[in-house]
Amino acid sequence: MNKEELYNQGMELFAQDKLDEAIAAYQRALEEDANYADALHALAMSYAQLGRLDDAIAAGKRLIEAAPDDELAYTSLSIFYQQKGMIAEAEQVGAQARTLGWKRQLQEKKDREKS
Image (spheres, rainbow, N blue to C red):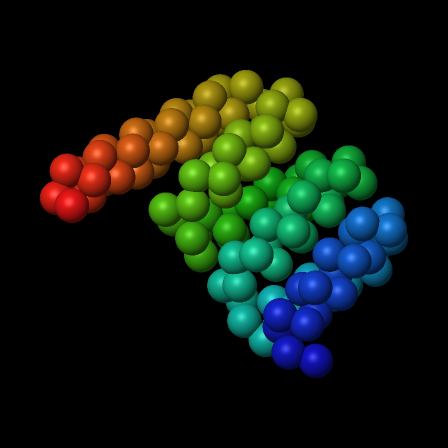
C-alpha cells in the first residue's frame, strides 16, 4: 500500500473507533513519507482521542515542522496544550494560528484586488 492508501485505511479505522489500528496505519504511512501532513494530523487527533496528550503534542509539533503554514496544525496543537492544562503554550500556539489566518486573509484580499 502507498501512503495515501494507508492514510485512507487509517481514516476508515478512526471512523470505526479502532484508534490503535488507525494509529498503526498512519505510522506506516509516515514510514513512507515522514512529512506527510495529513497522516501527521490524523495521528495527532487519534492520540488526543485516546487521551494520549503527550503523544498528540509530539505529533502536532512534527506536523508544524512539516507544514509550517497550516493554520489548522497550530490550532490543533493549541487544543492539545489546553487539554493538558498548558495554557501559556496553548495561547502562544493559538496566536501563531491567528497570525497565519490574518496573513492568508490579507493575501486573499490582494489576490482579489488584482483580478
